[in-house]
Image 1 (cartoon, protein in one colour):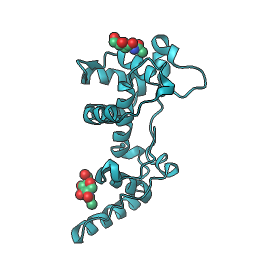
Image 2: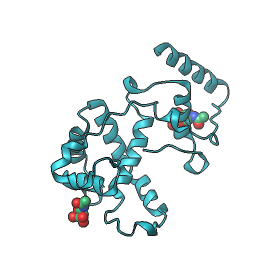
Image 3: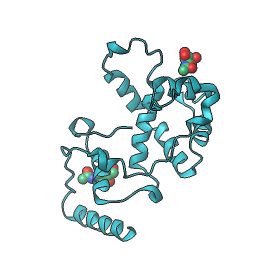
Image 4: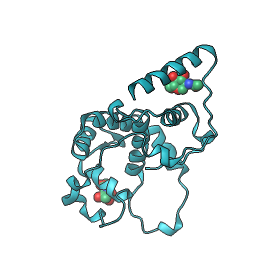
Length: 185
Ligand SMILES: *[C@@H]1O[C@H](CO)[C@@H](O)[C@H](O)[C@H]1NC(C)=O
Ligand SMILES: *[C@@H]1O[C@H](CO)[C@@H](O)[C@H](O)[C@H]1NC(C)=O
């Protein structure tokens, strides 16, 4: 695999030397490829069971706004509307227990405030969810950080296939509006 990556890097560098790399921004990202590119660690939500167990119904996906908000609240990760690095680090240590990923997620969270603002202002009203009591702020940070970690996946956890490299190039070089994205949490 290392040789494969080296070859790919060589060919990318060679191409960059002659003419710009052709990143096709209109190509749709195939979720079945994307999901295997970075071997994300498991979120250890059970670490927050005693405080946030209410928001972890059995069998439901662990991506609700309230669960994320509860975890952010319990760890005081947001101070004056911004991610506090030391608190966020403690939260990530509890959540992952994997240093490489803690670092990547922390860098992600720290660089996500603009994206989160954008997600909040682009949010479509969802009348059918009037009962949702929590703000999506923390969840949006999670979504943004997850995307950041994809693009900065620790190399030992990155699959490095050509299709994954292409998705990463697309993420880094195409504006959101031009990208046919199907990348989900
Ligand atoms: C794609 O993005 C990377 C990282 O930002 C940059 O180094 C590279 O030059 C970009 N390539 C193209 C074709 O825009
Ligand atoms: C988190 O804290 C805010 C501010 O104190 C509060 O309004 C909100 O209800 C809390 N959310 C959860 C899920 O505990």
